[in-house]
Length: 563
Image 1 (cartoon, rainbow, N blue to C red):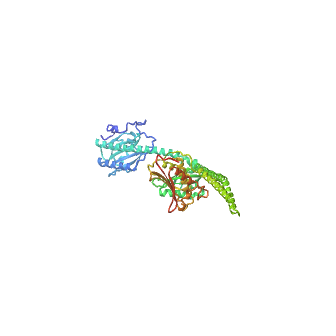
Image 2: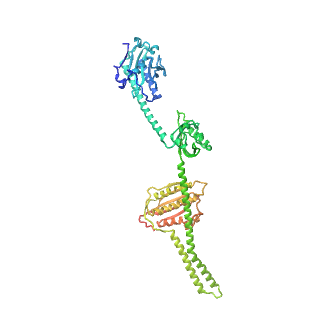
């Protein structure tokens, strides 16, 4: 009874998940699968299991062993019961060629029961005998893929045939361990998959990514780093960022970025300039993301986006806008020139006639014999020429006022939003902060959408001009839509500009009145004409402090006729 034998007849179905031994006749087959670390939580759980086994089975030793990669020439005790007389401490290492009980279980991939090794010559020289452990019950533990993980076993310093109940208990504990290994393998597989995805992302992301430590030394770079800065990974790793890609005048900036990132743990972005390997400057937008390295929190990712093309497009856009402004200015000059020539030509004749007739009439009245009839005729000719001058002014007003309009349903919220979007470049250029307060469920109005947008545009640009010289306070622009009494819909544009004197409010809407050096004074006049053609009104209110508010309202009646 006391000899050595396999307990294959006991719980054999649990022993090896139906796996086949290798051609050596029973030695464990080990693959090149990646090693999975056993977490501290799992080890604590297993420690509790071996302590319970030793206590329940009344043995001095319960142990979990693990065969160690990559050569699998030895195994290690990773859990050992805290029981009296246990001779196997955690981390004790055994070679796989000295004939231990666990070695036999690992190589055979089968359970083993030895009631008393002293009764069989095969076990008399086993290392366990030298420390007094004469009986043994052990089960192999497998990874989910069939690789042998190690063993779970109990040992006694006296003869012990281990009842069926004890064998079943140890088998169930082995199943618990294998369940934990299955979970660890699944988590390890998911982690490897995530690492593969991250590695692919790291390699393919169109920004240069650098992992750097607290001292700004490069730990890792991606291929895009080479494309943007010219340095290969071999040339970059181990070098300091400021020495490699920072212009001389920005050396301290690099250090300050890392010092700001690592202690605070904050993510932040900066636009700056770095240097290519060939010495050329590279405008970049960089994003700093601190990460923990083994819990130390002393590393961080610096992500560089090459802004060269963006800056080039911005410069082209800026030049395009400047050309547009120059053309617009030239157009205004040409318009004023044409208008001046037209006014001069049209008014020259009647004004000359007025002067001539007045002079003639005055001479006839001051002669020694006044010619009253002649003076009357001169006055009539003066009135005629004055009427001709008045007609010229009337035609000029007509030129800048009415036109054919198209009546349609107009959403003032949408219309105003479009104008703001079109004007956003100019507003941003003027460093204006825009805030909108649009009323919900705003009724539609009947009107000419293009003309109403022209009014809103005039008010926005007027507000921008009023704030362009303001430097002692924020340049704020508030655009609102709202319902008003009398079934009307209103739009207001509130600025923080220079404002105007209350007594000049009526002049603001007169043609050719302007406070701008290069203005024609037609914007507000035309705007008022448009609003009045929509049966509405346009007005302005100066603020008690800085700025002014220009508003208009139009009725939302569906039977409105635009004039």
